[in-house]
View 1: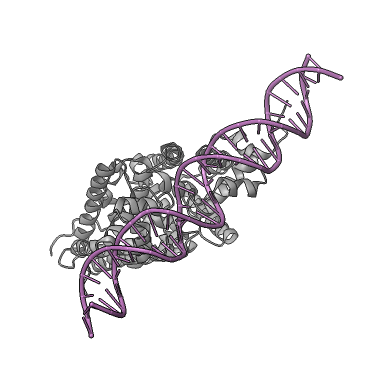
View 2: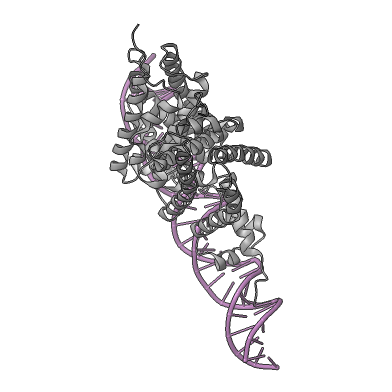
Amino acid sequence: MGRTSTAKEKLLEVAFKLIWDQSYGSVSVDDICQRAEVKKGSFYHFFESKADLAIAAYEEHWRVKQPEMDRIFSSQIPPLERLATWSQFIYEAQKLKAAEHGHVCGCPYGSIGSEVATHDDKIRLKCEEMLGRMLRYLECTISEAKQAGLVECSCPKAAANQVSSFVMGAMMQAKIQNDVEVLKNLGPTILSIIGEKKAVGTVVA
Amino acid sequence: MGRTSTAKEKLLEVAFKLIWDQSYGSVSVDDICQRAEVKKGSFYHFFESKADLAIAAYEEHWRVKQPEMDRIFSSQIPPLERLATWSQFIYEAQKLKAAEHGHVCGCPYGSIGSEVATHDDKIRLKCEEMLGRMLRYLECTISEAKQAGLVECSCPKAAANQVSSFVMGAMMQAKIQNDVEVLKNLGPTILSIIGEKKAVGTVVA
DNA sequence: AATCAACTAGACCGACCAGTCAACTACTTT
DNA sequence: AAAGTAGTTGACTGGTCGGTCTAGTTGATT
């Protein structure tokens, strides 16, 4: 019969936004329903629980954003340039979000993951999964950089982990200090971590 | 008249532990009182609010742990060795905590900070303050390493920020993946970040 | 026109939330 | 022994929590 209602989509969108703006624990189902202009009965028609909605909302957000990530990490672009574009993208995105919301909001996946990891395993696993997707982009990029001889790291997988730790940590620090400028120049540090080879006069023979 | 009651200390201790184990939002005042074997009336005799207790509990935790940090970052120890000891300390501490609690718990300051940063400014500021204390240890260490010619970084303060981002991010990742082994070998990456000079045959003249 | 499933509506539930209060105990100071 | 102070107790409040339930409303299918 084809979908006519937009209630589910609105719930997903509002839930993601509110949880990112605040936190999982401090946003209530009532809050979400009110902002989405959906009644509670409808909420529980679409979702089994609050945790269920959160998982769906984060999955949906990834689904929407993936094309942009695919573009940034396109193999058409030189690997080190991908990393530079990515870090610039993070800075711009956080700046925009902070301007909208009045506060630096950090990494949405990292924030909810770190909040509930010890007491909601379903949400934790979803975050772990999404972190894994991010790591795949990074590992692939670093691996290519290594093959191109641009980088000295011994293990691209480990390097991807380190880069993701650094970037997520920086977003967390920016959130705690409420200062987006912390994120302004992540690129060079990322290059240090993955062992960028300096152009030490490698002259063409 | 000298203190006789231990209720306040118990509340501080239990609150820190529960919030670290779980999260600020998911731990109730009743939970804390029950575990501390203190009645609610006494709680509000000592603390104005839940947020107030949390701030006091984190401050107290720092107070207790500071001597250990002072020891690790003692200027009697060569600067790069301090960083190695520190990263080893983090690994061991997280492993111990994970064994006790059954789950990797991440950085206590980072976790609560990232959880409430956007909606509780008092707690956020306390976390920012504690992060600042940590950064001072790091900046001082990196600065010394630079003066000793062990390190190439241009700005010790920026480098301290990067190191702290990386380490806090790694703890967050370990929490989300519930895998303490992520933290096993932070040392080398820290050295990359701060621009350790490789011993490139610098021979004694 | 009848049927059916997707969806909506909002009253309702018991549990729990942070926080209040007044009566009480115990200890110290005078 | 009286008074004062620090700490204790647990019942209580009003509001909110996640979640349920039943009765209805659509709009497409037959």
